[in-house]
Image (cartoon, rainbow, N blue to C red; front, side, top):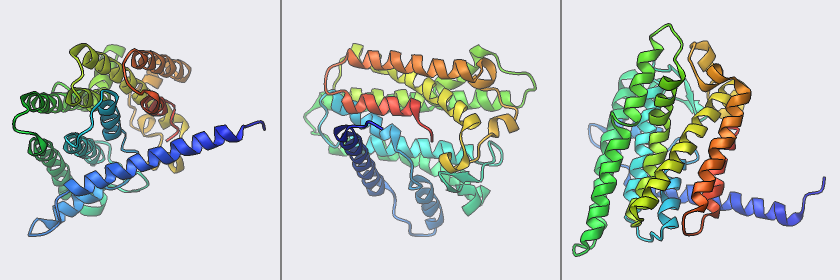
Length: 313
């Protein structure tokens, strides 16, 4: 086996760098979490249980790295990073409920509704969504009152957060997905693309465009970020479909084969696993080519995007 020591050291350094970034994000999340006290302490405990369950923290990391790509340096990004992960987590909490996917495990441990009950699982998801917006609005507290351009950027970022996670984004995609699960006929490709573009891609687009917006990127640069994020989001979801067929519970920390068990239409069921893998590679390549057209230090962000689409868990 002819592996150079320098290559091994470089790989270890990158792994350590990503670990440090995850630890930084988790410190930010803890800073913005409400303290569990008062009569409503149980819902706060359920929020923390859900939010601090581990994971790669990819969406806030993508937000931070895009912010840095365009020269962002201040802590105004922190409330948005926390809000982004709260919204992602709430969507997972609700996804796991009996009325949806009815999953017992997430990230290798019991899901929120299994630990706290279905009623508190619903409320914990609601609380995370609501508190996400409370948290994002705290970005205004970090601004210089005289810098009107920064105030405008924060207002625009809030608008992106609302649109990309609402009925024209993640929620819209999720609703179409749920509605079609009740029907017996198989989804067509056009409908599946709509679901993937909104249910999955919208949050990745949200994270990266907020990062670019807060850093003061030009409109054409923000559009390019949105396009490449959309490609990565779809590739990410297709890879998720592939892993549901080829992965194991030990690798993924959740049940596998659920798509087949629930007779769910996926990219793999429509196009086959070979074409699905080829399309993941092509979409990833297109996204990375767009990234190379942008200014700034791209290496870590490029590797992060690549890792999303080549992951085994």
